Length: 340
Image 1 (cartoon, rainbow, N blue to C red):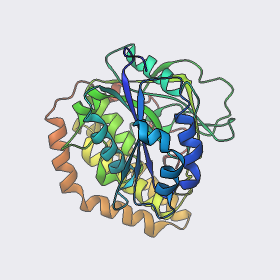
Image 2 (image 1 turned 60 degrees about the vertical axis):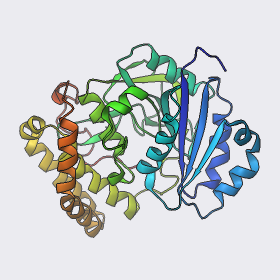
Image 3 (image 1 turned 135 degrees about the horizontal axis):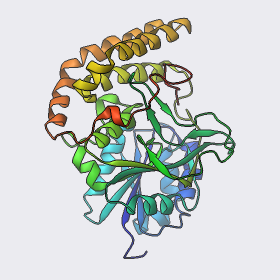
Image 4 (image 1 turned 120 degrees about the vertical axis):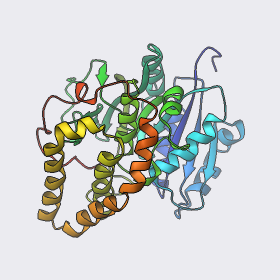
C-alpha cells in the first residue's frame, strides 16, 4: 500500500448473484492499485451469497480488505450503493468511491487507470473506462450520452470494439456499473445523505447523479485503458417487467427532479415526444400495462420530486445543460433508451 496513493473504496452491491461473485471479487483482489478496500453490500440474498463469501474470502475479511454489509431487505442498487458509500466515507482517508456491478470482471489495472485519470484534474468528479460485454468483442458502454429529448444512451453500446473508442475524452456522464467518483463531488451533490436517489431503486440513477454533477460544474472523463467485462442484465435479465417498469418510471422522475426549467421549456416538445414514444414502443411489445403503471407511479411522486428539486437547485447551477448534451435532438436509433 503506497501512502501517496489516494484511498479508494469499491462498492459492490449484490442481490442473489452468488454465481457472479467469485470472478468479480477475484478480479478486484488482483488489482495493480494498492490503496483500496472493498465493501460488499448484500441486499438480503436468499442464494447463500453471504455464506459463500465468508467461507471463501476469510483472509480478505480478516485483513479488512473486504468488508461485508448485510442488509435485512433488498434496498435496490441505488440505496444499496448509498449504504456502502456512507460507510466508506466514515474513513476520512477515502478520496474516491468506485462502484462495480457484481456481474462484472475488472482488468488488473482498471482501478489504477481510473484513479490516475481522475486525479489529473481536481474538477473531474467522475470517470469510467471501457465496459465490454463478456465476449470481449462488443461494447457495453464508453460513457453516457444525454439528449435534448431527456433521452439517454450508452455511448457505443452493442458496437464491435475495433478501437474506435480508444482515446481519452470528456463525456457527459458515467455508467455506475463500473465507475469512480470523487468524494468531493459526491458530497457536493448529495441530497439528505443520498448520493444515488433511493426512489429510483435501480436503473437511471447514474444518469441522475451524472446530471447533478455536471450542473454543479464537475467534469466526467472516459479512460479507455480501464477495461471491465459486464454480463449486462445478469442479475435481472433483459426486458423484464421489473426493468421496463423502473426505467420507464425513472425516465420521467428525471424530468421532474433534476432538469433545469429553462432546459424543459426549450425542449418540451422533444421531451413529450420521447415519453410518448417510450409508451408506444412498449405497447407494441405487449408491455402497455407495465409502462403505463410506470408513468402513472412517477406522476404520483411529482410532489416528492419537486421537494428534492428545490433542495438541489438551492445549491446553485454552474453550467447550461444545453451546452453539454448531444447536438442531435434524439438518439440515432430509438427514442427509447437501450436496456441493460
